[in-house]
Length: 412
Length: 212
Image (cartoon, rainbow over all chains, first blue to last red):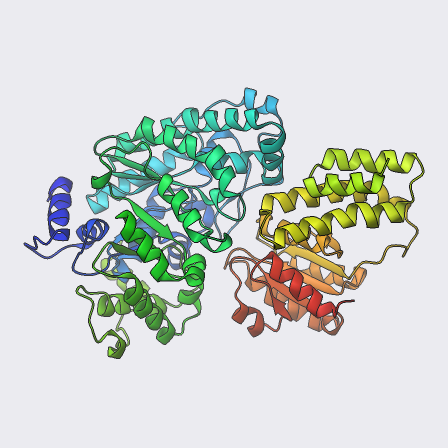
């Protein structure tokens, strides 16, 4: 079945036209637009896949085949609805620009913040934009997406680093704070360069290859309390809008997400409003867009899921909640199941909820992830059971990962 | 010229250039270093901390205030005689081996300085044995370790074990923080406390040093 047919089927299902069963991808789409058969769960296999498949960080984050095969094996083993081929997406453009990274054996590479690439205004003048798709590890990303499509017969959700976060990383946090006060014009020039000469060509290149309908710019540094809301409005939002206007099409939604901080301000709606403004401007036909409002566990555990749920309902967007990584790691299984019950009870409503396994810490017992999935399958079916509190989850039966890979998985 | 008020103002505003200039000019014109530090730089950083606690400053404001304080202190402190200025306590801090995330740690360092702690920042990616060697050498009241990745936080447990083996564990209070760490984990590995954020880390330091 073609992608368009799947999208149409999922959208119809979400509106009540339930012709046939949904597969994982269709469940995700139906969950974004309305009510699927069950709350969808997507996974970012990331460094958990790296560890489970015995790969070094160097191989995982620079060789497309082991990266995609390991990620696929991990996601398929647990039976999640959809997975994203997530690499160290904050670093790709910076790496391509020449920013020094620190590589380690067992974890993702990181920007060397002690040695930012733009140390002065003159450095910005000297900076050459990457050749989109060719510089640094951009070919690794494109080839990974190509292999993802080969295996999944679907386009991936593409990821890149948002310009504002790129600016903070390439200039250094304290330096850019000083620039914002003393030399805001320089910050605007840096943002213009990173937005229009780095991000836009990179998004276009990824979109051209994948034909993906969702491209996500991740913006960790546009978070509170690291930045004041006014700062985000002045230096970040105008450029997000520019990028979205330059790259979004009738069939392609580009959005900025990944920031946090509802718990750090007096009124959490202040941050939620910013998150909406990171998606809406520049995207036409808003009602048809696959928007999702992502609220991280650190925030929803503080402000409460009902507040986030009510806000998302008011704005008519899907609410996305991650599952706390430490909970998955530490367990015990009973606590994991209880947490899923709470998330479903307070967040599922009548649809428009997705759960995200954004990070499973390496070394986490597979039993914990299987329990998580079993609890989602048990508790999160629509309509949500009235006797949810009295329902139990049986200990999941599973075969060891190595045996599963030998039987079903892709070679590393 | 009211040098102390000027320096205090520069620190509150987070203007590190002005803070350094004022400190230098004041000293050139014979200002008393101790009074300049206490009533100028320290008073400024405390006021910035109060504004932050009241919710009227964001983190960038406090970070820049701390930078301004640092610049002023760099000029003034060499002129103080040993022991002339008394800190609330000495804190040794660093992100554990394998972890290069410095922002969270830097925020904690800033706020500890605001609260008049002497802070020795070992930086990021600190080899585990270095924590032990520095505790032996510098005799801090508190050792703060940060881990921002679950892959690196296990190193904290090792450091506590190494401190134990070296006979130093009873001489220093160990506090933990960072995105990967939880209160339960800190308790499990035998730390003396956990700070969920920078403000809590300072409260914890106050508690552990007993308002020294």
